[in-house]
Amino acid sequence: MQIIINRNELNQAVSIVSKAVSSKDILEVLGGLLLEVSDNVLTLTGSNLDLSIQTQIECTVEEEGSVILPAAVFSDIVRKADTDSLNIKVDYNNYRTSISGNRFKMELAGLPGIEFPEIVSGEFEDGFSIDCKLLSEMLDYTVYAAAKEDMRPIFTGILLELVNDEITISATDGFRISSISKDILYKGIDRRLVIPSSNAGEIMRLLNSSDSEDIIFSFGNGQVSLDINGVKVYSKLIEGQYPDIIQYLPKDYHSDMIISHDSLDQSLERAALIIRDTKKGVVNLNCVNDTLTINARSAELGQHTEIIAVDLKGHEIKVSFTLRYLRELVKHNKDEELVMQFAEKYNMLVTKPKNNDRCFSLLMPVAGRD
Image 1 (cartoon, rainbow, N blue to C red):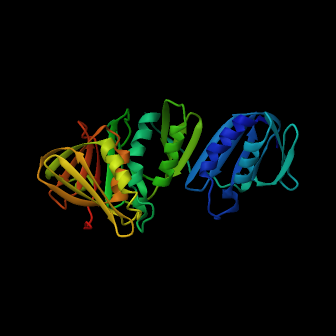
Image 2 (tube, rainbow, N blue to C red):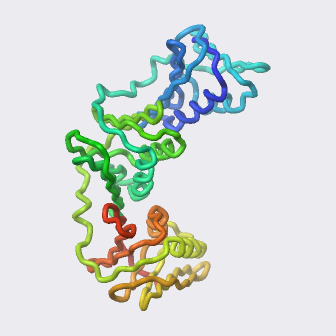
Image 3 (cartoon, one colour):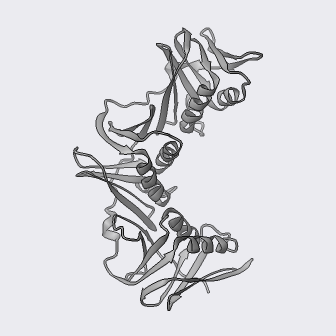
């Protein structure tokens, strides 16, 4: 394999596919990038078996072939090279790969490209097209609520449902739920797919950095595929029965509170200066007569108390939440005003955008601290 390629274009492509490279020492090849050259095109692939990202760049080809190069070192070389173009050549006697420019030459130990695992499992069916920005907003609204680690892997994923021109994305870790629905053009069979939340997070970051208007979703055997302006993303699915989260949405509420998003967000940020325990730190809310009092206490550091004007309908509210969970809920509900409803059952909090019943975030309370 021997090619001449634009360094800036290669740098961008390497940066994209490296997001899928494994950080664990599962297989040596998974710590590398697969470079394949054919028909004046370089195909770059990174994979950790659960998530694979692939993209292509045009180049000048003097010899076709493939090689696996260590991702971190190769990325650093390409990024720091002071040249407009790079010459990459593989010696197939030992797979040592030379990377050279105007005034430098480096060699990397490579592996045979044939050792890279297959990233596609079977054929893919046509799925649907969705606006890039819309999907990014839906993922941002939900991914945070999925479990990071759990004895039940199903809760580490996000649920994607497709029914009659509607897409719904939901996530829960057992203590909180976030769900959002939007209209799309979809005439296929009803589907319920669970995508690992870590993969969904990487997809969201790719969407945010892309200038694409629409992306193409396709369905495979235990996989989904996304085409983001020529960048192919393949994500494995999590097997299992995802819970019907709608059954947990309360039917009766004792109070509704409308509050400025920024006022609440900034107050909770100040409370976090006192409450440093991100797992168990608690914030107390007490609302009466259109006045919300936020209190957070730490035996080591002191306390934070703040008053915010709200619009309260219903009974007095006295409830406590894990501070980190409440901050994340507020952060990912970005309307100027939040509608916060408190349920008769357990004093659960359900937050919705004003005049929008197609999305909600639910949070379970905890025991308060005086």
